[in-house]
Image 1 (cartoon, rainbow, N blue to C red):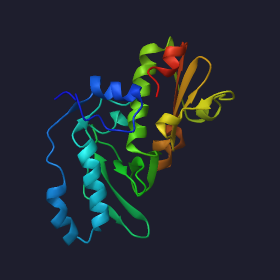
Image 2 (image 1 turned 45 degrees about the vertical axis):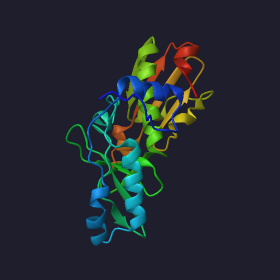
Image 3 (image 1 turned 180 degrees about the horizontal axis):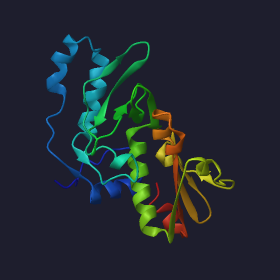
Length: 217
């Protein structure tokens, strides 16, 4: 089902357009019905409230594939919170599209990331993930050339004169804007799986002003 209204807040116009045109919403039963059972498991009510709030806004929304993480979640859906007071609580953000060694999670402070024994925040929020996927789609359509580098070559990229793209609220994954190019740096898998060879960067070059910004804020 197309997403016509109820676009999640906190997104730039570029990401709102991307979600509205390219996203869709699938039926989702929600998680409020699980509250009593989760309370019996000893999950704090405040953590259940977080999962319910996430589900009410993002539940059932499916976006096109991300260039990395095997496309990202197939759709957004909260799962049972897990964790402890000392380490903080997290809950599933949505199912993987393919078999992956990690899960997509919403962390203790609302950060969107991956978890496989080690939790790695990719973005400060689920909105940041949406911004990143939207920007990748926009840059791909506008760039005259696209180059991908991996491993040690990522650290050799010359980003002097580039500014961070704050819209994506990057943590392990960041975006950088130069005079005529955008650079996306993905370190999440490398940090989560302790595999530095998984570091990846994509350079979108030959961009004009529209290509660099799109609809912007």
